[in-house]
Image (cartoon, rainbow, N blue to C red; front, side):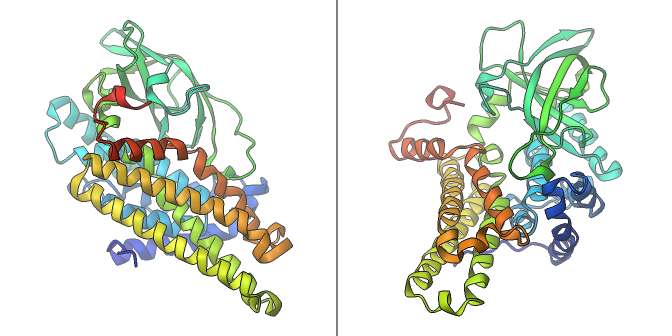
Length: 394
């Protein structure tokens, strides 16, 4: 059985209580009957934006494994809001982990500012990395920055920005316009209210409307030197290559919760149908899926524990890729098996199961994709040095 991370009871209770408010909203947000930001406001009001912020900076100081457990709880009732919370934490997770190390004067000042914005003003951060044609791969970033008057000017287009127009700040990936090297990528914090920032209409996907995802335009956006992430240029790809867990498996907890929710719905539907419950084929299939869920959960929490104990080692990095792959494949299996197990009940819009089944495939399009996960684990097995950015398509 998986060793569940020990999360402070008060935080676990708060997350559980939040799901009771989120669950009734989820269906209406999904169909557009309710404002897609409703769940995000509840998330902010619950004080969960500071989960990762170090305790000495006013946050809860959760570990990666503990945070993943919170995501699992939220994802079991409202995957969209759980993913939205993760988008906030993908943006600040590396900063929270680095806070206990040697940041230097500029880095320390940046961290102090970001943590105050979250803990004192409930500011929400989001990631603006993905671009058309290259997805979330930093090496393909075409958004640029140039130095100007002691600060920077950003130009570019971002696609699939979650929390678009909802978050207060966006951590934008950009390359130096004056350099040819594609590996020189930096991150900058852009405020939603900065001149030159604009958002498109929300993406009309088949599910997950609650993530409020849209394109973002940066047209001559000026930011001060203090908005350079960690106060250092050109470190983004270097950091990702060595510590990819946020980009690769930050989402995994939310999707693990979704997988558990799907299996519970399937099981309950079978239980209330005597004919299906008496079918040996159905019973065996439920058993197989239960084993797969248990295995994926164990792998996820083992990988998260490795992040907490040995962040950045190649074994740890292979583990988070393996966990992301396992959860994504489990969800695909659950989607394929649902009609066989429960028939038309899988499509009944009055039940949450049909929404869960529409949300599930998105796990495999989030980085890292299944083939990328397999390639990473395979290269690790072959002894390839994946700390070298040239060894993998980042």
